[in-house]
Image 1 (cartoon, one colour):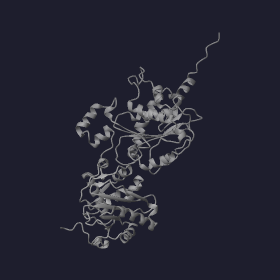
Image 2 (cartoon, rainbow, N blue to C red; image 1 turned 120 degrees about the vertical axis):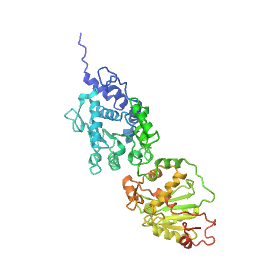
Image 3 (cartoon, rainbow, N blue to C red; image 1 turned 180 degrees about the vertical axis):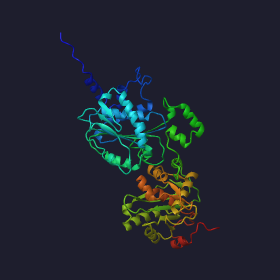
Length: 503
């Protein structure tokens, strides 16, 4: 009688682990000693509900063919404290390298200290607890295959981010295999790092997973954009610490008593919600969100005002905005690519067509830079229309504001608080909530420069500026329904019109 075949336990383990190549949730259930006496997980029954949701989401996208479709799997989680973010990061890392030969990954965090003292020790812990602990060795900055033939290409590295040194994120390539990128405490990672990483994730026929976690500490930036501007691309969730097993409910109750449930402190650290406004954010995010939900209402005596922001070319847009009282919603904005600005004849014709269609009581034109000649042309071609040049850098009518642009944005800010209705638009939301303000040496409120906003966020607030232009000065409703009515000399109206004159 022949001897029974010896079971190769290691080979069986390899086969078992590889069966979870597209099932990170199944891997986590299998690879760790949940509930086993004598282990650190003796009293743990498995992943928490929100962790299961993330793992399952990634698995479903993998099985749906994200690799074949050339799609990067994006997952963003904003949360309060103590929910187990670092554990989930560790599981993703282990699953990534365990189930794919020569898989590679990069993990970064908001600070080098966070990476070194919190994120990476957690990775070391879960590698030690895993059934595959002997497959990889951990160093101070990397999880590396123990196979000498693969140690250079089969690994995950902990890399501190730096705006001045982005090479580590520009070199994210692993064509034909698997690539994992993890941002821990992602809200504080600079936008430039996000942009460099995004530009690098281009390998074909490659499984690419990008996961971002953190407390939602900022109202601006790329982590915030995962939930607004780019929410169609990112799987996104917000996790309230109160709903998660094992969080410190006593401490949470103290915070709720001390700060209030609706305070930004509690929103960030417990509810996993972005703050209403950063300390220097001009327009609170909640104000904009409320304005986008409102019905458009205006009074019979409210003037129709037009604001035209002129682009200097390139990727920026010329934007034409209309507002009647508290209604900036009914008439949709018109956007003309900045590349058309210098084709003066065609561009001016388009602007004239839009203005003549709606017949506003006043038109405010951004006269900064190339806008001056545009305003001159409009005056010539639209007799009877009040065309008013506005130089953003000029002195404001109120000495409390550093310049005209700051003044207009502040008036718009107060209108949003008072009930202004605007169209629901992700780009507009980003533009309105992004600008910061400071106080200059004269103790005047000063709005962040447009170029600085564009450099910081990668977007130019052209639409926001167009809407702000409608608040350059008060406008009375015209007595005349038709252009060219009595006394409608445009130049005369522009020169004589003084909204600040006493009655």
